[in-house]
Image (cartoon, rainbow over all chains, first blue to last red; front, side, top):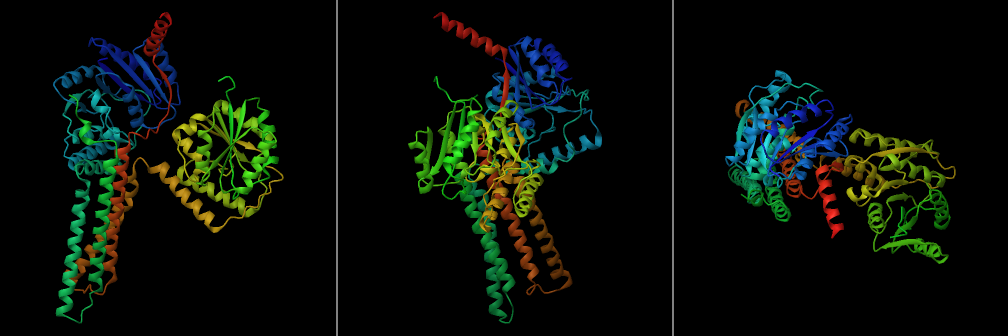
Length: 306
Length: 331
């Protein structure tokens, strides 16, 4: 199998058929062996029956029905685990992506990239509620991680199959997938894609995701930065607060020697607090070290086969 | 197996449980279970130290009743007992019942029948008799759950539950989380149905709980809340208060610094200084704990599959398998 196209869908009964038609039209031109995996993320409408009636006729279409609505990351994860293609393309089920772009993605992958990301350079969305928050989020992500991804929200992406399957996916990680893979050293490139305005249904994303994205991002950045030695990461802060503790103690000592009348309770208090923080962080670092060692995801194994 | 079992009834019981006379209750339950016309087995889970319970169970064995008794070396809680019973059961449907009669045995067939269109059936005892204090307390408990998790069940204290094997294969509970099994099952995507049952008139157990019981319940509630809401994103949970407290401390510290520098006030005798530093330190600690939790999730994300696939339609695969099968038959 050369290519798997993974599409999570949720309440998209009208979109399924047009999506299938345009996909087949675009993919047949490529002359390769492909499969289309539709993941029904617990839809309440006729999405599943529409999709499965297509799958009965066209055996290249596979449908995975999840028990309930778990969210897009889970849908993607289920589809990715089932996919057998050497290359995997993921996209949205709401017709906002253009299947004709898949060709360009595959060309880019063949140039030696591990991941190719879409970039909606002419977004057809509402400015205030969609474009601006997404601009801010993208800017913040780039600032924190120093991975210059232009459009983290764009769903159309192509991956090398064996790479994407090894990555942990949980919570709402799918948005951060490009950054995660890039942080771990995968080679990525970005191409401009066409973006259609939504035809059916309504958008499923809210306005304020910035806190969530930001906090997840920070966590990932820290995890990847100190992966080689977690004790070191916590250790820096432990040493820092240890120094503050020491300095306040020394200052208090000098103060009390030269001005015996002064009260130094507050100063000593600050010292003790920072001292305890230092000890606390050291121990946490040890625990983190232990967790890394016992965990089953080893960062060096994430990107090997090539 | 020719005599495969459809229904496993699991009852966990120790001397410490307030329970009805075991043989009486067993025969009552048995009558109810027989009405379902399913092949069944009874599994009692108990511990070694429960002398009285063990004696009564042995009496049942001696009069020729075919029950399974699982004796744990130590009691680790109802949920652990349920797991032990589950591992030794073979029914497609599991029915758990309380050691003291909570529902009328005639309701059992109804419970099993309702499983046709759901994965788990739990009971709601309507118009419960009992003292007002207890009823109010139960209301508050369920209201808290609804508030925290947005899932509304009305009678989690009723252990008469029927569910498919799949549920316990996917949902892991431990310790005393038995009570919360429906909540966890719901989160995994199983359909949980609540049916109304009539209360018993002779519901006798005196519900007088110690203070420790309530604290235990509260801790359980908090752990379930965390388990359901934040296990996949711990830093969001710890990070927010962490950042908030840290910022509060920082602002306070800067303000005091400003006072010292420009207003010339002495800080040595101001406890506010300590408060601000305490807040900063506390904020950092919370954030760091959240980070460690996040590392745990990240490095272990592979073993915790938290979704259930209901159906896969893959005609090409089934065709391949058919071809393989026919090939094997030819050989």
